[in-house]
Length: 216
Image 1: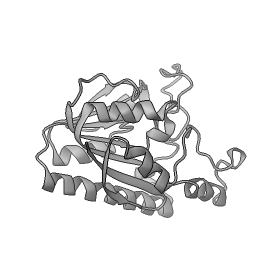
Image 2 (image 1 turned 90 degrees about the horizontal axis):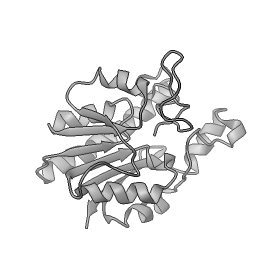
Image 3 (image 1 turned 60 degrees about the vertical axis):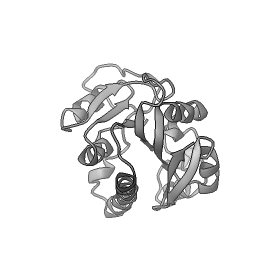
């Protein structure tokens, strides 16, 4: 559910063969000032949505689908106490999770979430849907276990791929980041996510689309 080849610990085999897990680079602490700047703007946009939800609605339980290293889950826990983060089986992610206090972490598939209907007041899934073999199933599952607010983010295409090409990244793949199976422009992503609720607001931190969906 991340942006890079499956991360490995020592010589152990991947726990989720053939699936991209983790980040291609440490975007939260990148040395490249441009990457660091863009990532901070994206995080600020997410924080703004989280703060608006917090001001608007009492929240008891929060889920992050595709939590990666746990950075977003940490931010969620700073606002709400009951936070669960999940991602596919990977030893590298488990090592990261041990450094994050507060949220509960578990392994699960975004397309088959192990929770009852209407379990969570807020469901967050950022930089995940573009990785899913069946994005529709992932969106349906996210909506099924949620009951109020969804916060969803994906790369804004074709801008994301063009940015990769202009910086000489993934040239053989025509700018497509490894593991990105689905591609949405902002209008296309808003149409896609509006299947499960009303678009409450949109943020466009370059080069991403962030949608806050109020469920039906």
